[in-house]
Image 1 (cartoon, each protein chain N blue to C red):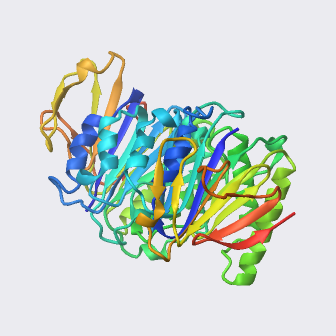
Image 2: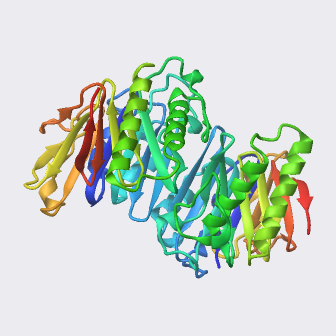
Image 3: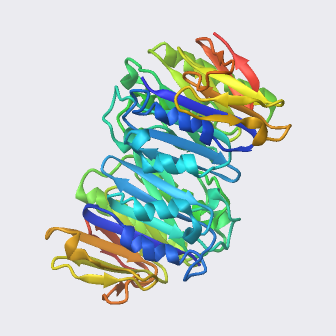
Length: 262
Length: 262
């Protein structure tokens, strides 16, 4: 199994603290030695960093810890390979452009009969069930919505369609998902995903996986809202909320904007 | 104007030497302060690093210099903005998936009337003439070749189509191009592009833009073939070949596989 980490915030925020704990699971406190990746939506663009090596040994991962990239949406993944070799093309997150926006995707779980999912606009570069499912999912969305939604009704219809597609993938196995388009972060729970929203008054947090604590009050303003979503809670002194199977949350600016259930 | 750097090699090769000279032009010896990027096709995948800051000051660029990523094809770009703000979404190289392969693109020059180029499969994320032209070019290729070529005749037809599309873009202004699909590197010259092929017996080279020399004989085997393509020659003691306007070269494994002229 792999692990997921996501962030949605109302101000550009660095994820160094959470990522430091998370990457220790990549061959340190966890068994996920088969690569890692992280994607940032920053003001004015998208970029990702991926490495097919264990995150605890990766000089690129160390750079990400030390070089605070401020972002409104982050998606990260550490991999324990099941389907597909350990290679760069099989390293999450995956990205495709739809409607002139970079859509970024990371998956935790394993699917059966995924080879039968048909492709239209998008084709996988690597050989994982995860990327195959992403290409199918995004192709289905694009088929149903050739143009981006431009009002709340259309947006709601898009999210309902996305929830239906996630439910179909959950029918094939385990499908925990982080997906983003630069404005919204979508988190879908098939078995395991937890979240926490930090806002004023900010307190202290200490990592479960590394000797590190932070006082968020020293790094934030009273209006900041920052939500972190992860496979397992990353801190041991805060109350994380576990999502329920079949639940899709739509995050914007650190807040839950919509919620869909089975 | 921006500057381009490309590499095609028959063995995975790091580009640290050339990149060290190249990035000095990004705010050091050159005026190209508006961002930089580099893309690597490695065994088993693709990744790129982009930064909207001057390359001489970028910690990510320093990492690329110090952390040898071995690759068969590299495309790099340093930017001096003309069309489009200085922001990550406007930072080359750009990438889109076609036929399950990541196609990577960087452009030097400036186009007129580019807004009229129609889009089909691909849409720009940013606001540059370069990315707009890329989305048009790749959409045209995909329209003409819905499936990848699977023999030499089809490949030649694809390359001829590509040459024709480049010629049309040259008709709109200055269009120097680096384009790659993981197997081939395509270089098209509109005004300025030079190349050098290094093979046994390997010798010494010294950078024009930084105090650095290398003896390639110490870092290679007798069978290695490594070609470097750049806007301006990067070394001052080797004989670079300048391309002629309207010329498209198709590189594979460090060798020129095909050549198209006006």
